[in-house]
Image (cartoon, rainbow, N blue to C red):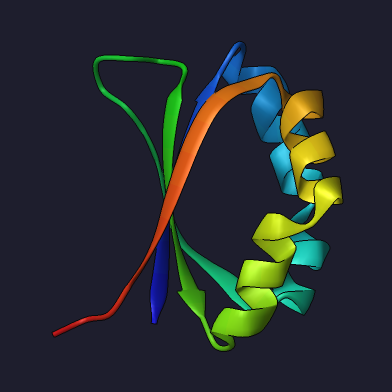
Length: 87
């Protein structure tokens, strides 16, 4: 299973520093980064693709108030995420 996420951020460079510092927490949640994209037309829109080995743990990580606090710390203004399966 994969997880596709979109974040709109105030400052990409600042967001990236904080995002990179949270890698270990994502790994403990069973999420492995597959790809990171920056929108070609909106420099402060970021797309991420993760491989997820345990949806429950990944969902708990996404729902954890610390994740919301991390989002605020990164200057995230909007986000969405979707669990998807390869067909």
